[in-house]
Image (cartoon, rainbow, N blue to C red):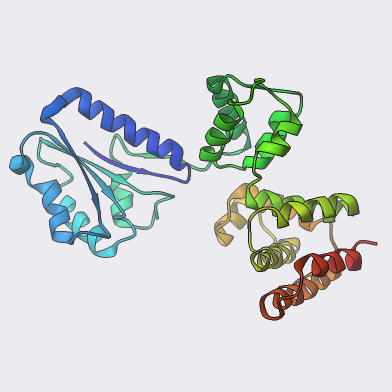
Length: 312
C-alpha cells in the first residue's frame, strides 16, 4: 500500500491516518512495526532505506513519512526511488506520506501519489459541512442547542474542525446539556478571523454600540494591540482590492490563495463601503498601527478616535 494523506481539514486527515494504522496493527499484530520518520530531521538516503529495505528490520512495516513534500531533498529522493520501482514496494512495506495542509498539485510526486488507491485529500470544510460536523459532535458529546445557538457557535469556531470538537467537549461539562447563546458568548472563544469580521460587519452596519462591543472582543482576544492593528490594516486592504476585483469567487480564491468563503465574505463586506471611505480607513489605521508600534500610544484611545471619525 502507498498513500498520500493531505488537506486543510487536518482533524479528518489525522483520523484517516489513525484508521490505516489501526488496520495495520489489527492485521499484523505484534509482528508488525509502525515507523514514523520526519524528512526534516533525517538524511534523505536513510529515509529511502526505511521504504526499500523489505524485511531488513524484520516483519511487516508501515512507514509514516512526515514533511516530505516541503523538504526538497527528501521529496526528490523518495520520488526517484518510487519511479525506479514503478511504485511497487517490497511486499512487507506499506507507505503513508502525510502532509498537514493541501499538497502542491504541481509536484510530480504529488500527481503520482494521488493516483494510489488509498490516497485521500481532506479539503477545508464548507459552511454546510461544518454545520453537519457540529450536529454529529454535539450528539456525540450529549449536548443540544437552543434556537439560533448552533448558528452562533458556528460563527465563533469558523471552519476549524479541531475547534468544533474541543469547544463542544468543553460545553459538554456544563451541568445543563442545553447550550444557549449566552453559554457560547461566555465559554467559547471566537476564532481570530471571526472577531475581525465581526468588527468589520459592525462598521458596515454603522452600529456604534456593536462596533465598541466588537472592539472590546478584539482587545480581549489575547492578540497584541499592534497585531490587531496590522490585521485590521490587512482586512481593509483586502476590502479595497475586492471592491473592484472582477471574476468569480473560485478564480479570485485561486489568485489570492484565500479560501472561497473568505473571498465571498470579504466581497460582501466591500460592497458596504465607498472607495473613498476605505481609502480613509486605510490611511487612518496605518497611522494607528504606527502609533501603537513606535510611539506606544494607548490602543483603546486610538481605536475610539478611529470609530468616532468614521461613524457619526
